[in-house]
Image 1: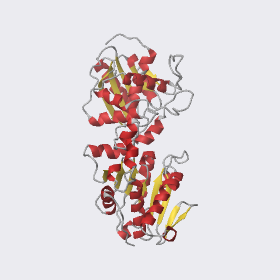
Image 2: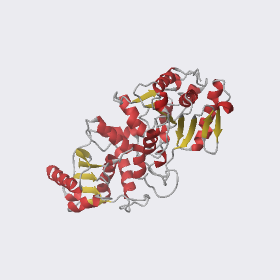
Image 3: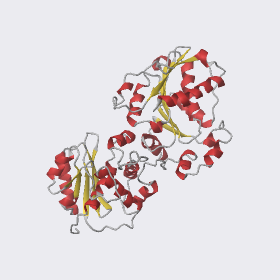
Image 4: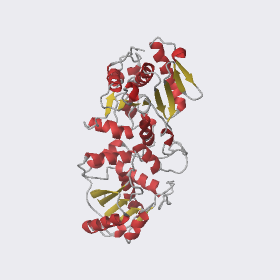
Length: 443
């Protein structure tokens, strides 16, 4: 079957990437509101399924019900525009959530939400698809994205010589899409197998006539920057403790003096993929830092002792994450302080109500960063970006409910970032000394 797809310039560019054997196997498209994301995805998926008999495709989103409510109408619109009766060419199976096409092809609706019974998304492991589309990538965990992309290129691709492709559509979101696509693209460092196409409302020549006016009337500055102008550097999450502009000022707060006591914060790796993160502080200025991967606790302890002597840090001014294997490092550094994030708050004031010590430290960190009272001289932009990402993920869980304040757990942050927020934890631990009010001589 030959179809004539009506598309604007950015959609045409995307369809060219998706249909040609050009070495690109992942395309991120959108990054703003009303850029024609959904119609592009439906056009490519169903256009391909109609063109190649007996192929298998998927459309994935966090919640299955959102696919039924929001994507299904776009599928019906696509068939109408092609002059095809959908009941003849693609019948929807509501029980198993897939379209059975007249030529033997199938298009599946996949729910990609996190399930406690399947934390590693192993349910995607046995799936075999020709190609697929993740709708609203901002809702999807990194592990879900990683696993579903492995299912592509496993069904009739060689028979028809179809290159395996994954399409991801989105609005700006500081998760794995920002790390793996947008940031490298903005720096001209995006790998050759990946492509990002930014499409704004003004690129969509088929938009509703009042679409631009609606977005222009958005009052919230951050929401408008994201959805109208496609700005990824802004975060629109009321659960976030730290403001983006305050975070980036950390690297320019050169008015903060190197004075007072020296401290060392050590975030110890729990698993092989995590890193040991060490920072030396003179007051609230970072004067040295190091990261080590896959090192035994003895090597971590040796590095701490080396820097303790080099920078003159008293053992009682060294705080080490004591959860997991960190307890062993604490034992090796006599006189150091163990940090247990889940332990009770310290010296909590009457107007404070924190679930645990880590949450209490995070709110103290919020005060310091908002006051532009922390300085980390930095020349490596990659290190800067990692720290920014970590600090942006410090969020209050159930922020809209009454009760004790608590942070979003580290495991949930790792699902969003695809890695451990080691630098952010290092900053949180620095506040431990502000709460304990330990008074030691200036070194």
